Image (cartoon, rainbow, N blue to C red; front, side):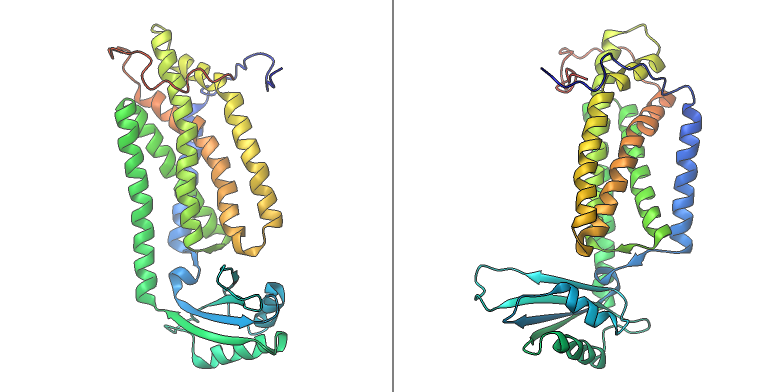
Length: 322
């Protein structure tokens, strides 16, 4: 017995107000861009520069106690992670404390480092500090540049991939949907001033892949139905294709969100920003696959003369049971 979300294939009309949906998406992108220009992002240590202190203790690392002791110093963004290595001794418990550079300073001062070490010694009197390393603004600037290049190259690779696999109209719809997802994700981080670090860049690249997967599944079904219903209006073919893949899209997004929400609630502060970006990205990516990518394809139109020798090429997703 197979689980089915719908007893019968749904018949929703997604394009009765497609211009309104595109307008709403465009407005949200403008708001996100304006927020980025006015407020900027709350950059973490990776992008602002700072200092990393490595500590060792024979007792287990208590991240909550460490953080509580340092928070009294009001130093801003503090990241504490426990380091695991098979080569460590049983009584060798290592932690990395990362402190952002204070406003107007290129690095954390020696007085601040000494204050942090004193605060941690109140928690673990036997704690030792084995190394102190600083990341200056030049390195941070290079990280920002590298992160931007990584996102742009990922979207560019998607453009080439979709263009080769489908028609150029499909590629334009898919890439604009990805740009929409990235801009809205950056915008929500700007609006809420959530810490933006390298983990969020990883989340952005993951969102690009997730959203692309959703879009390709829909576009594969669209291409199959365009061959199957040669005389049918493009709007009707798009509606039919999205309805046929609706169960797959919903179930994939729903199960992914269950795991992400569990991580957000139980995963702790270290990964909360990354998980929030993923939750937002799944929601926005699912929306854009239907209301942005497909709507742009409807606006651009697509040729109906399919002359490839193998009509099933690239349709490995076309027989998904929805």
